[in-house]
Length: 90
Picture 1: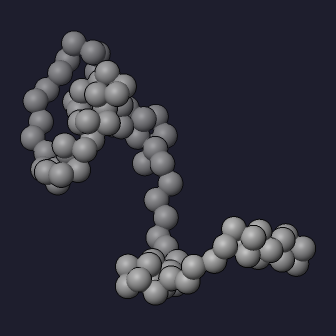
Picture 2: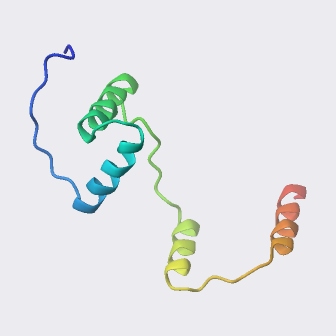
């Protein structure tokens, strides 16, 4: 399909996501339509989604739930550095 062969298409979008995306794409000086065309072109080129889709594992889901429920513990930067050192040396 050449650039001059355009068709009108109706798609259903989440209203809030659409507005957030439009604001984001303004920063790149492209329209929502341009962004959708970029996504579709890249999908065809990649023969799949142009980004990795990951399903969180049980540990990640548990951590996300803890954050949502306010069950996170506060640690200092020094504690974090020590934990990171432990991960690197083991």
